[in-house]
Image (cartoon, rainbow, N blue to C red; front, side, top):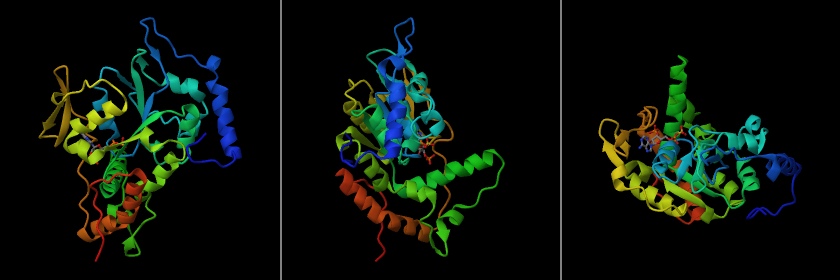
Length: 300
Ligand SMILES: Nc1ncnc2c1ncn2[C@@H]1O[C@H](COP(=O)(O)OS(=O)(=O)O)[C@@H](OP(=O)(O)O)[C@H]1O
């Protein structure tokens, strides 16, 4: 049963349960075994978000571990109806081939803020251990905007300035989607209806940027992996301005779309953002019993 939610099953829940049952009965799906003994398996852990939190960096860094097998692209199984309808066999087919001792992981940042997803993950595996990487909520808003701005640029489409999204009638536009995605306590509450807090490991995305190794060590411990990733797997690349990875002598940085400059935002507007997130951040800290070093300014 869900950790907190004890309400009677709603019709949408029973439809979902039926959908999952249809595809999850043992004989209904196979784990696609390769002749070398590897096979495709359902993920043992999922990086559920948050969008622009550093999910790709986390996945790539974790993949340095020999016991990790990661799905390359975002799967969007639980949040896209077209995918979810295909059932668990389809989900398995998206997974990398891995050996029995390995942990399969996929990352889809949109899961964290998608209300249907926690229940769907729960219906698949009630004891799933989840990874969540969060970043300063205001910084995340700027990163979110930057991502969509570049998506438009690449298609040679115009895109309004960040001020046009952030300001409405002279005040902060709290209806902006990117702001909602940064209200972490709201989304976290949805997850905690189904999973206990100790099954959701929160990676500090700001710390992962500044000094990745200690954060990755914590993830190794959470996933009960042997400590195999070392400080020497990371080196700071001055040109990129971020840590890059060193794996068996090979060096690589994340794609150029990661670590882009954010738009310059007026101090007044930035102050408004920081002020707006003060209460929601406090609620989030109470919910998870831990604080983060996020901007949280209150006007005097
Ligand atoms: N080592 C390293 N190299 C490059 N980038 C790094 C790294 N560690 C964390 N980050 C931060 O990751 C941010 C992108 O987050 P996501 O991968 O979750 O974005 S996405 O939701 O999948 O689009 C990205 O956000 P932006 O800085 O806004 O581009 C980075 O700040």
